[in-house]
Length: 116
Image 1 (tube, rainbow, N blue to C red):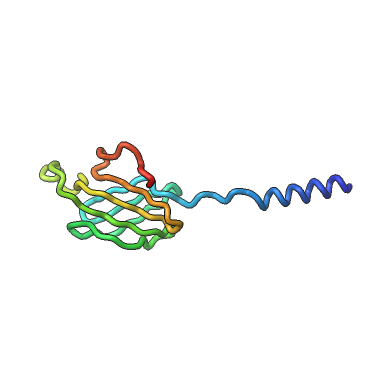
Image 2: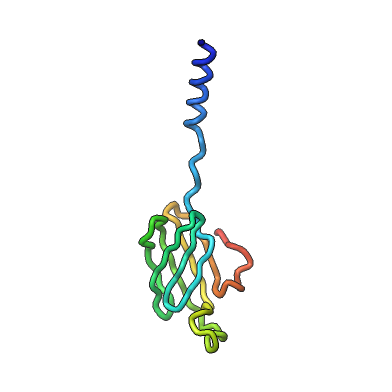
């Protein structure tokens, strides 16, 4: 009986040391017209309104965090496809814990998600 209690106590202590799950991180960021759309690893989608040159602000969604968008110029394909193609720009997202993620638009400019 004592061995069982010792085992249960050890198990309870180890359970207290479990690593908490990582906060949701952005997996995709796009610009559609005047809107920033960010997809997160937990399946969430956050949106924010953009001005013609980009903008910055805080997300009003459960994942939280802040964003900054710089529009460098129009995509030449927008003359044909309109808002269906993203302009040339940079999206920087910051989680509440301070971790930063950088995306380039259009998505074809992204070779990998950059975490700096």
